Each structure stands twice: as structure tokens, then as C-alpha cells.
Amino acid sequence: MTPLQGGCLCGAIRYSVDAAISELRACHCTDCQKVTGAGGTVNALVAAKDFRITQGTPNRFTKKADSGRILHRYFCGDCGVSLYSQREITPERVVLRAGTIENAPPMTLTAHIWTKSKRPWSHIDPAASQTPGSPD
Ligand SMILES: [Zn+2]
Ligand SMILES: [Zn+2]
Image (cartoon, rainbow, N blue to C red; front, side, top):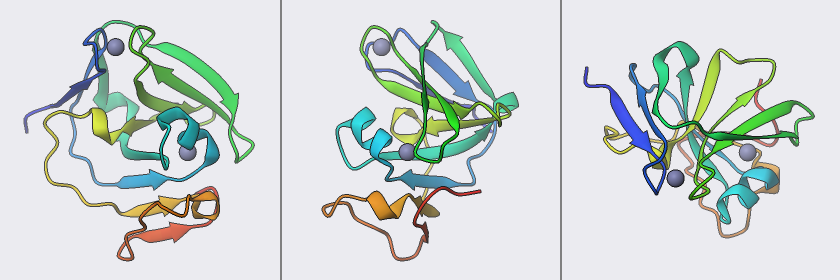
């Protein structure tokens, strides 16, 4: 397959993903709302071994998430775009912001998480699973 390519708005950070994306998850937690200034994030779950930064070095912001877990959020220090996050306890998984992938194939949402804090104007796809709080 063609690797997926993506990056931030200014082009300083570029990445590639060498595997197909099987799960696309919307997160409605309050931190993701602030990160995007919108209803939350939509993320592709990717194995860290398949994810490569090909240009630049993202900045890292670390905070205890609504789940109580330590979450590292990676973003471009120049344009501020949020690119991905990783839980401290599961570094083998990258939670990649789906909107930063440039050559993504058609994908549908498979899950909504943190729906208990979703904004009233956020759309929930009834075909996707819903979890009020943190997933496993
Ligand atoms: Zn940038
Ligand atoms: Zn979130």
C-alpha cells in the first residue's frame, strides 16, 4: 500500500504511516475540545511501529487526562497544529489526528468516546459505538 502522509499547517512537521487504518475514533473529552477549539478530535489509532516523523520535531505537552492517565500531546511549535497523542502507559499506540492525514482513504467513524462531555452541537453517528467516558 501507499504510505499515508500528513503533517501540520505550516509544513514544519511531516509524518508517514505504513499501515492501513482500521479504527477511527471521535473523542469528545474537554481537553480535546480545547485543543481543537471545537467539539473534540477525530483520531486514527495507529501502531507506533508503523508511524514515522519524516520531518521536524514536534513539541510535547503533557497533562493528566480526564481519565486520570498521563497523556502526551504532540503539536507543531510553529503553527500550533495538534498532530497526535500517546498515553504514557501505552507508548506502542499513536492516536493520530485524522484531519492531518492528507491522502486518507475513505474512512468511517467506528467509535465515539467521552460522549458524556460532548457539546450539544456535536454530531454522533448512530452507527458507531458510544462510550460515556474513557475506553479501555
Ligand atoms: Zn506547523
Ligand atoms: Zn480527548
